[in-house]
Image (cartoon, rainbow, N blue to C red; front, top):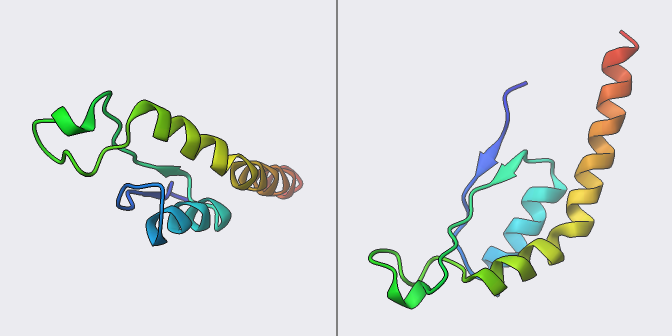
Length: 83
């Protein structure tokens, strides 16, 4: 199966934050996230990137969902190996 990647709008609050958790929970293989050390100084998309602290918080918040994803992949590996 082909990997599934997605790029939800950035931000730590509101529906986009929930969307990132839901994306992990349903088993997407990756998120594309824009990170900038000083988003307000970015040449483009200044309102969109997370700063480093926000990215670290997002990753910490996603840990339980990433763990669920990893556990679901273990089950898939066992099934594939038994074929």
